[in-house]
Structure formats: C-alpha cells, structure tokens
Length: 240
Length: 331
Image 1 (tube, chains in turn blue, purple):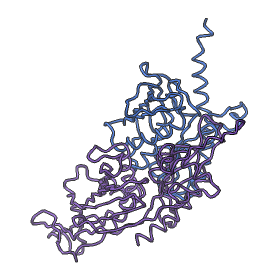
Image 2: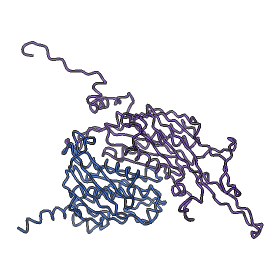
Image 3: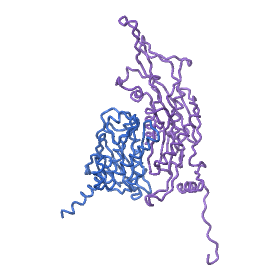
Image 4: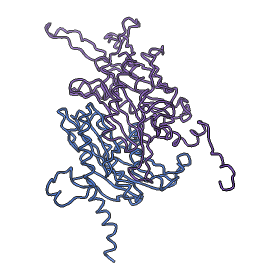
C-alpha cells in the first residue's frame, strides 16, 4: 500500500526524504533557496539544479538526461517566481536497484517515478513553495497487452513497453516517458490507469471507499504521509 | 483632450526590435490572431521541409547531411573491428539476439554541439548537459529500435572438420569478430530541434553504410578485409523510425487562475520558439506491423498542456511526418 517513506533523515539539508519501492530506493535532499552562481542566475525566477547519483559509479550522460527530465517536472511544481535569483538544489542518490538484468530503456524509465516522488517529498519537507502536488507511477505492458501498475522485476524484464507518468492532484499530465512498441489505444488505457492511481494517491478518502476497494491503487498513500507529517509538526502544541 | 492638444503618439517598434525586447508577447501577438501564425511565417502544425545528402564524406563507411530549415547536422559512420577474443565479458548463451547490439555496444553514437553551431555553443568546450542528454537519447533509441541485425555485423568463421568429426556432422560456425559502428553526429548549424534532425541523419547514414567483405584468416589469426568496392555490402536496416518534436507555447502562470490561459502546440520548433516554450513532446514512430503498434517512444516534459486529446493529434501529425521523411530517404 504505497512505497516506504521516511521523513527528514538528513539533519544537514533543508529538506530530505527516502522512498523505497519494490524496485528502487532513493534518498532525496533539497537545499534552497540558496545562493546561485552568477552565470546560472535567472532575474525573475529561481534556478533549479537536480543532481542524480547512481547506486554505483559517478554518473554520465544517462544521469544528465534523467536530471533534465526531473528538472523539467519540478519546474512545473515549484513556485519559482517566489524566490528570484536564487537556486533550489535537489540531490537524488539511488541506494538500491533491481537485481535482474533489464534492457537499458526499461531501466532508465523505471527509475523516473521513484526519482520524481522522492524529489517531491524532499521539497515538501524543506518547506519550499509548491503550486501543486506531483505523483509519479510506473506501468508495464506485457506481450499480451496486460497492463500492470508498479510491476515486479519479472514483469518488467519481459514487458513489451514501459511507461512512467506523473500527474498533479487535478489530473494534469506533467510527465510522460514511454518506451517499447505500442499503439495509441494501449497508451490511452495506460494514461487512464495512471491518472486514476495518481489522483487517488492524494485524494480525500472516505471510510466507505476503503472498505469497498482495498486495492493498492486506490490507497491515498501520499495524502496519509503528508497528513502524518503535518500532525507531527504541530505535536509540540499538545505537550505544552 | 480638454485643452485641445493632440494625444501623444503611441510608440511603435519595427518587428526586429519588438522581437528582441519582448520575445514572448511578440510570439503571442502572432499566435492569438484568427489564423494563428508563427513568427517565421509557418502555421503551428507545419514542419520544416527536410533535405538529405548522403555519401559526401570520403573517409567514412557511411555519411549523411540533413538540413531541416536552418538546422544542419552531419553524421558519419565509421566501422571498426571488435575481436571476439577482446570482449571482456562474453555474452551469455541465453541472451536474445535482439539484445546483443546493446550488450556488446556495437553501435556507438556521439553528438557534438560544441562546434560553433549557435552563439550558445562555443567551439571546443566540453559537452554540456544538452549535448550529453541528446547523445544518450540517441543511444537509447538506437538500441531499443533494433535497427541492425547482429548477424549483419558478425564476422563468421566455419571451423574446418577434424579427423574426429563424422563427415555427416555440420561444420560449426563461430563468430570471430564484430563490426562496431562509431556514429559521429556533428551539428554545424542549430536553429531549434536538434533531436529530429540528428536522428534522421543517423538513419540516413546507417542506410548509406557500406561494410567491406571481412573474413577470419586462421593462419595469421586476424581478420582480413577485401579492398574491392564490389565486395562490400550495404547495411540493411530493419525499420526506419522517425522522430517528431513539438513545443508548447502557453500563457499559463501560477499568478493567474488555473484555467485562464491560451496555448498552442508548435510542430518542429526553431530556436526562437524553443527559448519561449517550456513544454516539449517527442514522438518516435516506426512502421506498423502485426502486433507492433508502431509508436516506439513518447517523451513529454515541462508542463501540463498536452493531455490525452492533444496526444492523439500529435501522434497523427507524427505519422504524417513519418511518411514525409520516408519519401525523402527513399527507404
């Protein structure tokens, strides 16, 4: 029921979070708004810098590409005009990855949802101004056109196409990375299921909904995490 | 006016000044007309006409120069021998043939932007994020689209039958070496949308590639090649995938209400439009065969304008563009 999340594991960063799913574990740290280099400075908005470190090695063109994708998503989520001429620095460290050998395209796309979710949780922890939530989800389509959300490693290894999508709480599509071989009808079904899962992750859940369909897809995991965080933040008031 | 003096004249700028001072409102003024038009005169769904010249580089096994508007990209393919004995971790026997090219790294692309192709890319500097990102996207697409059959790149050797083998047993064929293709892509002029042009240059250069006839000489224990052009064979591609990129110009802002904005999807953006558009979409389509839908890749980031409906329109435009490119490439 939602990935494993821990809040503020790093005391030195402005905001941090770890997220663990069945495939990847990511440690995210956010510093900002901080001083920006003169050459990167933007006069009317905050500059966003994302650094991705793989589980082993230092990272090369693959990580530069992932960084440009994550930066573009975060730019739609952060209120950049509130801190002009500053820098918001996000560092994403992958700690574990899948053990099976996957095709490179599958491996690249399967890491994106964990990176986006971790970055968002770290931004919330750091108290940065955000214009919307973002929830990312991974889907795999098998050879028989069976769509699975949050697939297991074996399903990923044998899939015909893999899709990473991210939506806001209103159902606006912020990120779509799809690779493999598929047609438009399959993609539309994938997009529908992804939208339902992402919107449900932050939706207001009533008791009846939970009893009716206790599926993992419908669980509002992000809302629960954020509510728990908010409760912990004001817990000091009850003790005084 | 009350005292009878004429109203002060409004300030008017020539086009170029308006474009330089406030590029966003300049483009917006063009697009918000009854018949939306872009600053370059194209309509939003018009792609630029492509132009391809192949075989112009004499020292490459294959080459192509692609011009799309003012964006010009040169691609050269150079083939080198990789001995099977030099492979540090030989591929497992259960590895599918389709994965061999990726596993051994037999197609090695590199895109170079630091050629002075635009004021933003000075020659001689190390590859920046954009160049690295484009190189990686091309590598990822080359491996995922199964362009080249590994058997076309293999140099086989039929081992001679020894006295122990029965005459009826078939002689075993062993792969002694592979052709590795180094694909160098140089951008000589950049006016927006380098990915589409670079990808088309890669496809055209690979189609143009001639591999010399190569065989394993057991006495010298080396691979020998025939210098005769008549013995060389053209590389055959499995498919011709084509990339189409779209940019989205939007007036949305977090300072306005969520639904209060106008947006236009611009096909094949030039550099002026790219600077003003945060959201972009790239669609790679190949030919439709049984059980294969034909869409190889969808990459959309940077905003929330393109949803399900716009995606349908863009896929249709990408399929039309595929037919246009295929006609130009003649493949």
